[in-house]
Length: 113
Image (tube, rainbow, N blue to C red):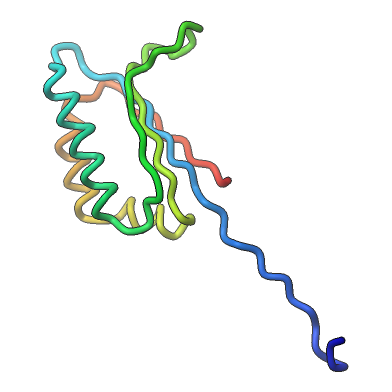
């Protein structure tokens, strides 16, 4: 029983954020360059705090709905603040600068879980 004048407060856990990255590489990008990009991204996710999970791979869908996107990655962040800190981290900016010349298309989609 609460004392008079004290309100009960419910605390909800912060939502995790799924960060989905879909890519199409430029013509002429080698398999070695693609592998290095994903290796570098894995290294980044292991050094920046707040990344709970990371997976990546090439498209294998048989549906034909990939709109020419060839590869993807999914990160799970502990919360939106961790995602925001990742996006502005200087190491992420450095990664983007090295990756963008290889990419024809980049699509990013985030949602809370």
